[in-house]
Image (tube, rainbow, N blue to C red):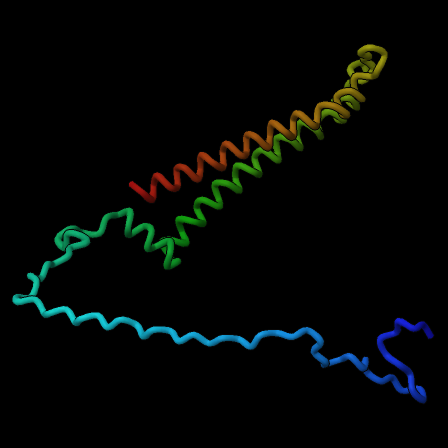
Length: 168
């Protein structure tokens, strides 16, 4: 056992450091200073005459609820009419998505059929590579990008029409 061990072993039991708790540095006792009491503020004198009451009007009570407000309430409360409006929006977007999906499937599915029905078309070569390989390997990427961009524009247009219908 090393000499700089903080604990000594006596009969297999550790004893605490003999310097533990002994204060070798002399400290001055803390000084306590009294805090002055908080100044007492004089109570304000009540005003001679109470202020005049003012009526605050947030909206003209004679105005009727606008159709915009009614439509928003219908949507927020999820009434049958609000649900019908949202369902119509979802159907329009679904229809646009299905039409674009059908178009992509038709073009990409039609290429192998065209190659099968027209062997001369399938035998064409461009730069020594069969045209069928080029069309089936390269055409799907720009076609899918174009379909995605078109769907995004259509969906945004449907949403804009929906918001315009609600606000007007």
